[in-house]
Each structure stands twice: as C-alpha cells, then as structure tokens.
Length: 231
Image (tube, rainbow, N blue to C red):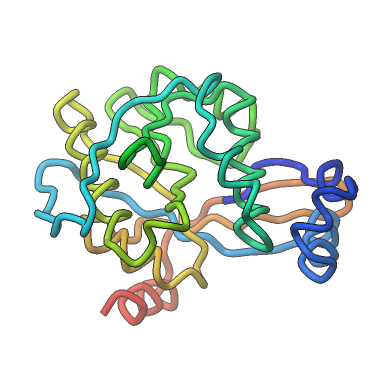
C-alpha cells in the first residue's frame, strides 16, 4: 500500500527520468484523485504451513533502517515501477519505521520486508495516518515487501515471508496482518501460500488533498474474488 505523498520526488528531474513520463503522470494524478481496493489478509500463527525453500539461501535478519543501503543501491539501476517502489521504501526507512528485515547473498540484498510489532506501530501510524488498523498487543503487520532484481523468480518472497511469520510466532504473536492490492495476483497467491486468508477490505481514497482508508468486512463478491485469484 502506498504510504507517502510522492508529489515532491516526482517533480524532481532526476526521478522523472527514471520513472518515465507516463508512469509519473499517472502517479501525480493519483495523488489528487485515486481509489484503489486492497485486501486485508490475516494469518493465524497457530499453524503456519511449510514453504519450499528458495533457490538461493534466504535468512531474514533485522536491519537498522538508518543504515540499510540496499534500497539506495538498487535505485541506481532501477526504472519505472521498481524505481517508484524503492522511493516508497526509502521513505519508510527515513521515517524510522521498525522493524526492517533483510536477507543477503554474498553481501547483496535478496529480499526485504517490515515486521511491525504492536509495540512499534506508532511510527507506522504517524507516517501513514489512517492507513492501517491499530494492532492488538498480540498482532503484527507485514509491510513493504521487495525482492531485489537479481533474485526474482527464485521463490524468495514465500521463503522470506514464512520466516517472518515464524519469528512472530516464536515471540508469542497470535496473528499477522498484511495488505495487498486486489489486482496484484502474484502477491495474493504468494501470501495465500504461506497461510494468509482474506479477512477484510480497505479502500485507499484520495480526493484533492483529502485522504481516507475505510475498512469493510468481506462481502460475497470479495470472497469469490479471493477464491478465484488464489485457486
């Protein structure tokens, strides 16, 4: 889920060149007028399924957001949607959102994602007001998944996410929540494979500077959409 106002970075020539005029234009319009549906997924940690290991070793370790340079390094060669997604994650780092985990291979970042515990959620809420539910003391949030270009199509997302679920379970967390755009079929299927199920919906709505993100229970249409996309 996008969590920052991208007007300033999109207006910078160095960013526009890497994002591309078409995508930059669409994203600027979205800052003013935008509606997008996200599925709120929930994984109860009492029974996390086994996941096939990735084709490259994945070992998720906590990273200090203030000194992690993987996103900046990747940004130097990224373009289009990847470049935009990296800007969003750099912004999360600069906001000090805890806790970022990363896996590396021969010193190169492979996969990253935030595991936000209830005790650390205030930083996320201040960074993205109204975008996420208030976590109960035994809940956590996964956010900001990113697979680095050299390690795609190797199964690292499922492996890395499953490790974070096991870390949360070992800490006594009862359930983990994450959000995926309803049109992101690959990510929805990846989340389903590690034990997530559709729990609710959340619309991201922007109207000329006003932003809200109402949550709604699943309706029959959304349940059928989930079943169809993850079959």
